[in-house]
Length: 399
Image (cartoon, rainbow, N blue to C red):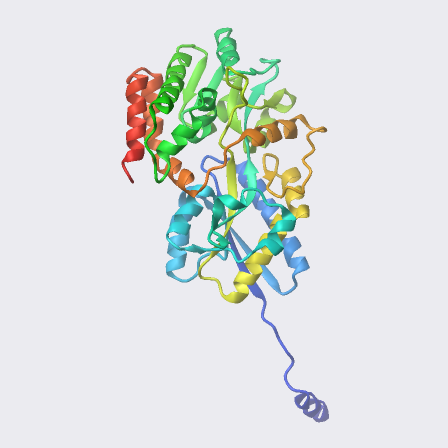
């Protein structure tokens, strides 16, 4: 025994490498039901397990945070030097954290990202780097009960015509979700420009387009079977309970609606304008961003995990297993020929708008006030012209 101890001492201490820890925070949207959160948590956990199997000595810790709390949470943890190494969140909260320098630019460059063909990289480029990297897309669609509505409306005029025939239609007063209807009047970009973080004044033609849209909303509400509600989450509840036949919805609501409606649920692209131009909804975009507090080792692991989450294998799995999410990796083949659902989502994305930091923050900050103005418009408490003026004034008043 003594000889063994002496022999082991002569060989020197055995090398030991402590595990590298990776902290990931994932923001989930407001109004998300338990089904969506559970699916997200399961998929994130599965991806973390696969990553750890491929990267021995790495320990991944996941934390889900409500989107309304994610900025406050990161601020508090950053004050302790313990912000998450990798953040998954939508455009507006990521933009806020980037402006406060609580996240820092990605060091990933063309050598790593070009083979993955990541969409929308340029929208978040700053200098030689990226403030954030696109991760997943969540398109907006029309969801309807095929038992009540065999054929969905193709154009905005059809939507009102079907409502006049008794089809129960639901629309939200959330500007980011309702924006698709403004594209029928070519008013979507003027609205984005007027409400973004650094707005610009609209010209007379743009003001008339916005006015035409607001007038359409007011006249649409005259139909007794067309309802405006405060949130898209409420629309989902009303469709699944049988109170509505057709709604605009985000694709992430499809798993929940399927559980209740089964084969009765159908989806389609949102109605086009009167000239047939496809609707331009505002697609949700999840982003990856990196903490300023990470050690060099933690930053290296975070970037490695980001590349793993963006590779062809992971993006395809997320598309298939988390219905409603679409890949930003353009190498992934979307099965549009085999699935009407994926065909509708792909058509929606091809016409969609993806907001940058300035547009995303502007819409988020002003959304409650715009909702109130839209409510006054559809209920006739204010004229469309007055509401148009007040919407533009909101943008001019810097928050």
